[in-house]
Amino acid sequence: MSKKALITGGAGFIGSHLTERLLKEKYKITIIDNFSSGKQENLRHLLKNPRLEIVKDDLKEPIRLQKALHGCKIVFHFAANPEVRIGETEPKTHFDENLLATFNLLESIRKEGAGKIIVFASTSTIYGEPEVMPTSEDYGPLIPISTYGASKLGCEALITSFAYTFGLRALIFRLANIVGPNSTHGVIIDFINKIRKNPKTLEILGDGTQTKSYLYITDCIDAVIYATKKFLRTKNTVEIYNVGSQDQITVKDIAKIVAKEMRVPNIKLNYTGGIDGGRGWKGDVKIMNLSIEKLRRVGWTPKYNSVEAVKLAAKSLSSTTALFNDSR
Image (cartoon, rainbow, N blue to C red; front, side, top):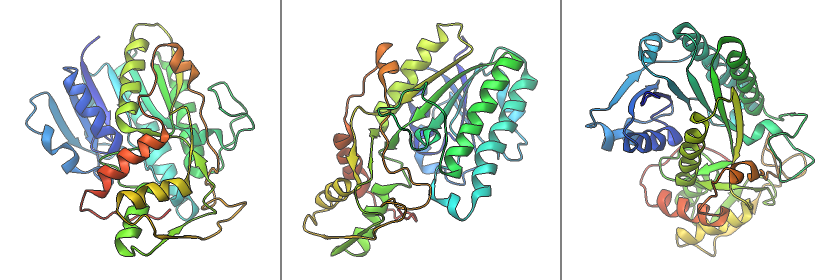
């Protein structure tokens, strides 16, 4: 297998960490990013690496993508609009940034010919609100409750159909909430921003009982690299793995951890009450717990649990000076 790979969204949160790890694995990397949410500073420490090429292009209307694909046997597709809540007001964003972008990428891969492998970052939100938890990869029916989850499920369908129709191979990761350095959105970022603006009262959307799994970024990248290496040694056309921790944490407890890290442990927590039974917004999955038994059976287990992941992320993110515009 050629050690030349293309990473879409390689300047983003997860993509930048994946880029760094693959460079350490001696891959030659080409990044495709439109820098709408990805940031050049995420890659600053890697820019002098001769095995890294950065191509600014937009998968919605790609110009340089076809050329960038030449010689790349594996494509890590991590470009997307990651903000679930925007679907309330701008659902077309998820269609364009996720579905349309994925279709355009697949078409370019198809034109390159059979034999390529696509590794896709999907999401736990494709399950919607399952009746069985922990939720395994074979759970169904899949009924997402957000346009984000729907668009990602659509991407999975496109990818698997292209794999079976055009001779590609596909590895799909359904990710829990990934947290850590370079993140620019999510509940931890939101709490940090709010505390910086008002260290006396912290607003929490919903009733605070929203309960989900959180995975630290290094564990996420470890899982992606580990499972990808396993997949490369098989002849499977499509493989799907859940990636997450083995426990959960409530939004209320996340708020307390962030407040403690920012040295305001006695801050007043103000709950908005939320909608539809205490969720933060329409489309917010209130309880999520992925089964990672399939991934554990092939030899991978996360190093950190949800509480540890949140603490590490809060410590790292609260030490940065940048404020991000997000609301959760």
